[in-house]
Image (cartoon, rainbow, N blue to C red; front, side, top):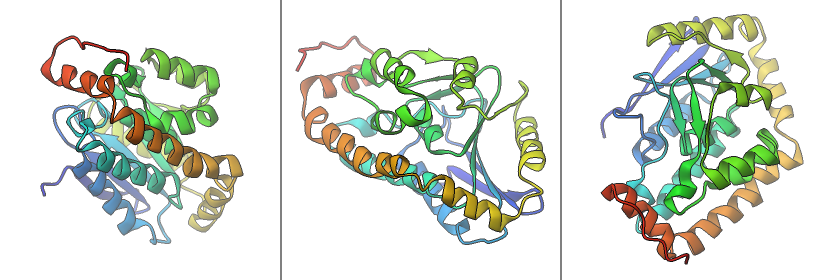
Length: 262
């Protein structure tokens, strides 16, 4: 297994920097998901850790989950692995900060919903185009109403629209603004944000506060029963449908889908 996720410590080892480096587009394949989960698991019990920075290489955060792995024979395992990653991020004991530039689509956008903070550059383009492939985004369905509000969640799910940073600022998802820069400059800007916002805080206090902040019953239900229910709907109804498979195959073949509405 080649390394698609590069882990290093920055800010006097108090910050874990995870860089997704999977050209082209930093696709969140099952392999990438497993490497992210492994890096988080290795750092989870480090009591001096104060923050995780999650970033994509090459000018984009990620184009989303692998479309190939949405095929009928792979989709159940892909969803199970992806939702395990979402829960790992959502339940991580210190803040996980998404450092977002360029495109952040589909499953990558759903990853943002599990993070504690989102830092964004002016050029971000964020959306969930799944409906155009004949499917839907389960994590957005489960977590979107809490993180974005119901109106924006339904707009994104039902239209596949892409929105910019201003929309996410207004709904409160974006916690900090980053300059339009490149490569290591973005990492430096994100590390500076950490230093000013979290760097002087107790790692113990951060862990306790994260635990308290995410103990709300609606949050726990969204990650539990709600996510389980939409995953089950996806596997039992979408994966077995004509249109749910036709949209994926049409995208991969670069042709227009032939919908049967079933």
